[in-house]
Amino acid sequence: MKTKLQKVREGIAAALLGKTPEQLEEEQRQDAVKSAVDDYLTRHPDWKPTTAPAVAPVTSKKKKANRIKKSLGAGAFTPHVMDEEALRRAREAARAFQAADPDRYGDIIHQLQK
Image 1: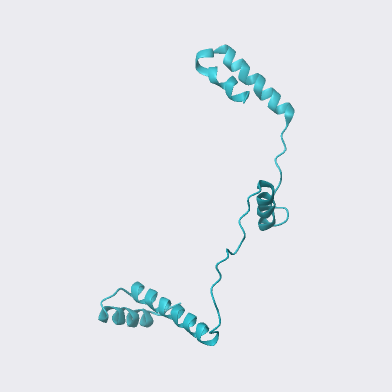
Image 2: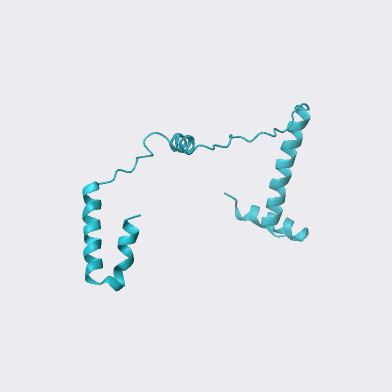
């Protein structure tokens, strides 16, 4: 947490450079990151960036589902369980709606049969 004095000092320093305090702070962050990267590269001259992706792409839907389950953690994924009786009742109700007003609800039966 910055004190008012620190905020005023940073505001004056930014104004002298013709920038806003946020711009100056962002530049300082970027300079710190660049300095850290340069320091690392100096200490590890043999380091080369990898060209391989961090995670191999998955082509199989089953493997993709398993990867997602693992990333979510244990107990985060519960498979969908369909109640056949409730589905049958819903279809009967839709047929009753359609029979009562075929012009308005004529497309419901076609959607349910797909």
